[in-house]
View (cartoon, rainbow, N blue to C red):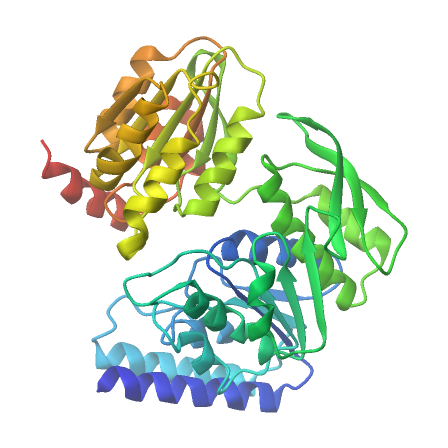
Length: 425
């Protein structure tokens, strides 16, 4: 009960904030995957002109999102009444103060049916961005239509809607009611898209940014994997709608970099390339990451693939699909982490002719990969957060001075992982 009372109070404070500061524009980012990368790309571009507020973490729930919007730190102990009294005091002061802000960028998440719709009861965004509709929390969502209807709600309650044309099937258009709609992606069917002309691991993609408003913008975007360009194009669409100039957009594109744990290129031992995509995993993200690995010209490719969590009854089918994408002609090894990947992905990859090893922990998987690593190899590391922690595989393979670029390395997270791994020792 206390949780809902606090949540209701925070939502009312958010309403008061925007009523007091109507000049501040809110941009929300929803979607099954890609929210954080898209949010960060939008912030990078908009910062070339506007004063932008964006919470760096993923506080996107009903209790944490209002505080992220208001720029107030989320309390460590949510059951501590005194902590919440301090929070409410800080919130009231924030509402009274001059904002120093032009734009707030906030991601919103859907763990259960109705979550996104609830945000629409008190948020009135200027722009709503939807990054993808893919399987998520399928133990609660009965089918993909339910997922699509939920995520696209963010487009419907926003003044302007911008959606990823590549990762949202056309059949889900039946759930869209906002006529002020634009699309982005890496294919020509989207109004805002990228036409790639060249790619290197050092510099990323060279090509043209295509928009309805401007002549083609020649640029280089330092990311890996075609799917990593989509958050960038979502940011371009937002920047265009916000009235930014070509020069401002071009300047922002030059400084976009991958988010830690999301298709981040790290230098590994033996002059290897480590694609660190360890933050989380889902079917579309894992398959896209695997395609990015295949595109690299290298003497050895290794795919480390952890469980994809939260798939419910779709887990077997989706893990088998990913196993079928493992090509023995392009992969020296497929290494799995976790029970679901071992049970479904590994046997399927073996039937395809791949060499496969399965491990319970990311540490054991990393030790094996280290033992078979060849000079100049490329290694993809992909896995979900809960119970996988594939960043610990990356830690074993990358140069030690880069560990500050890994996800979940705070003292709190290190203790959580130490407790988890101790169960297997």
